[in-house]
Each structure stands twice: as C-alpha cells, then as structure tokens.
Length: 299
Picture 1 (cartoon, rainbow, N blue to C red):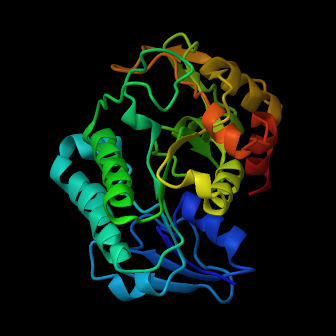
Picture 2: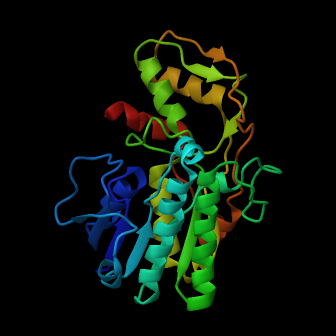
C-alpha cells in the first residue's frame, strides 16, 4: 500500500484520481476548496483543507507519491490577474517541490497543460514543438514544468510532467475554455436549443476522457523511464467542433441544428496531439468520444 498525496483532489481530475487510487492505497487530498466538484470523498480518504502555498512539508514527507493537479486554471483570470496566476501556479508548485526535495518520494507527477504551446507551428503537436504561450496561465504552467524538470536534474527528484489537451468528464467546470464547450453544448441541446458554434466549426480539438488521463497517471507512476520527461496526454485524434455538436445532438435525439456565431478572437484553429512518446510507455487511450459523452447522460 502506497501513501498518495493528491493536490486539488476535489477538482475534476483530482477527484477521479482519488476514485481510482483509494481502494488499494492510503490517499490524502490537499485542496483549498476553491473549485470543488463533489460534496464528499470515499470512506478512508483524508482531506486537508489548505493551499499549496501553505507549509506542507510534513504532508509531503509522509507521501510516497505526489500528484499535483491543483492550479489556477482560468485563462481569463490569468489575463486579468497575472500575479495571482503566478502565485498559485508557479510559487505553489515551487513550494511543493521544495517540500519534496527533503522527502523520499517515488514520483512527483505534475499536471501541465497544452496551453504551453500557444498557436501550434504544426499538427499533430509533439512535445519538442516550440512552446509559446498566449496567456499568463500557459506561461505559468510552462514555468512549473521547467521547475519540475530542473528539480529532477539538480536534486534527483523523480518528477514527470504531463500536458493534457481537452479533458472532459461529467464533473468538469463549464467555464473551462478547454472543455467547457462540451458542457455548453450539453446544456443547450438538453433544453432543446441549438448548440452555438463560433466560426465555421471546422476548428479541431483533441478531446480526452478523464478516465484515460487517470490511466496515464498510473502508467507514469509505474514506469521508471517516465522520470524527468514530459508527455502529451491526449488521444491523437482530431474532432471538429461541428462533429462534436453533431454527436451531442445525436445522443439526446433532439430536433435541433448547429447555429453559428462570429469567430472568437484569438481562437486556435487546429489542436491535436502527437502521443507517440506516451505510446512508447504503453499508453493507449481507450474511451471513444461518443462513449465518453454518454456518461454525461447518466448524471
């Protein structure tokens, strides 16, 4: 049995990690309750209400594995309050790394973001592609990556970074620009309204189920060759926004049609990941988009 500390364990991804790991491990959640997605946790899971910028040395020293999902995730807020964004995403991460430096962790898994790439130079996007963030959020997540990799090189801390693309789940935050389009479409179609698509709808995205993300976390924890590396976390399959809307219309069986509006300023046209590096570890995304979206109908 391992002791696993999950920061942001009440959030979308963190809560699914708790669900996966708690039965065979001792799981501790560190969360400041700023964006919770659930009212309760499984029996036996300990929840510490605290911030990642607080004194956390004792918690980290007691852990075998640290999975760091906690973050300020609003791109819009990062544009308005870049200092707040950096305090959370950069200084909060460094605070955890410093605590981990004196611990005996088997793995420190850092959740970055595809936002580190900005406008992709080419698709599919591989991990070596230029990273040119378009927002303070993207810049802070990239800074967190660099610190994690540096702590591996300088101090031998076994860090691994993953860059999720468009994660979706029934617990997602509808305001999240990277996956919120699914929630927005779901709400409108469920209510018999046309899904609203900005631009021509031929923008492509790489939507990945949170269950596949959790599988990937398990994989990078188990594989020693993941230490000191960065991996795209995605499916490698592109879906247009029009295709996404059609799938959701079909799921609900509603007599609605896609409605188009003016394009959003600065919207990235195409984003799909090259996952060959993760595949070499043994990663295989299992959840097809329609199958994953059907889970929304059960809640």
